[in-house]
Image (tube, rainbow, N blue to C red; front, side, top):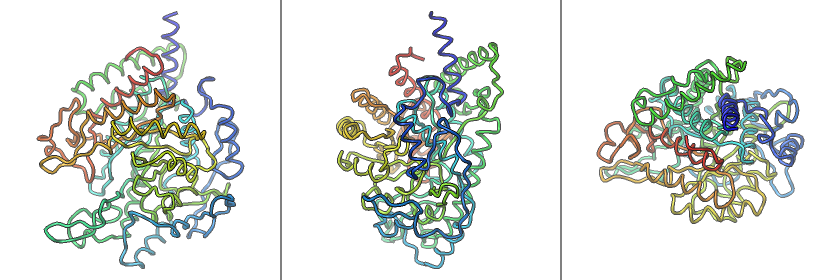
Length: 532
């Protein structure tokens, strides 16, 4: 019996690792009948532009290349909501938006973006939506990670590769450890713009516009650099296209082959404690692969040699998002083709704000970040605005509070969602609520505080009987010294050694991998599996 159980675990783990999750593996992997019916219905009535592959063959989608955005959507507005169009956000208050001094330049940049090719396509977006729908039913886990803010000067194929590698490592640990599929989403190919506390920055009595990200202005403190330049949106689009090309090559061109899992270990992590733990886990996976081959499973198939990898960024710079919004020519539904998924930040999630107005009309999966400032009543109204039809997988709630505030406030939010029967994915963002500034002026985050918030997140969901659906991290595959603590033993004094971030501090590869093991162990505990 013990042997049979071990064989079953090996088979299940390999199936999960090979990303065979487009169709259910067994009865446990299927969506509930009611959720599946709602998803199917939403594809028919125009609610969410989503028909699960497992429920029938969907027509291939093509995105019409429109030179300008029509003024209204072809879908009828519900009685309780205003009519939506890609430009209807302009009738609401838009926070955290740069002011462009030259309207002609802005219009020229927007017209250029109106005519470019989409960065992502409807079929890819629907694929992600289906996976998130399963996560909302407790049948998966989301791993979102990447740079705080992408930059033009740091862009290089090696940088993209190393971020991809560390996410693949983390996903391997979480998948094999928890026996649960992991949805991999990179904060890449569009994560440029950042919200600012103040519109202007003052240094030595000189006031200039705040640095808002490379797609808005430049970091150098000069009038020329800090000028909000709309043509930087076009430059950001072209870099995003290159990033997506690189990611698609890595995810489908052999680099993601499960048999190459040893090659995913980052060089600087190789000799660390976490690198050793990863090698031991990789050896277990190798053993499982040899077993699968021995019983006749062909591990050279695409299911074992490629992965589904998606992108996401904060929906902040609305002129850019509107310009890349396209209408699916076969369904008439709208997609923001700048990314597979978008989220609205804590500072821009006002119920009557422009960002919620824009996102409520697009077919992409969405996220919204909430802190301890969000009340249960407000959260329900946000959910009903962003996902009025309550479609599973449509909306993720990304929680950023700090451990103590999370233990106090999250139960009430979960209770309200359960009471109203809302389908959401709960994701922990344990980094943003734990930022501090050192005596020598560096912004940093303590690994122990990040770990404490993650533990609190799992503890609360255990108490509430809900599913902890994912984690959202600012990380890099590079050997940086930006967050203190963890196995890399970075201290306040050593932050200056390799402090490279353009904005907020990121976990380095060894710190990120350490968190992945912690999450995997916690997931094993929830499912009753023995320790790794």
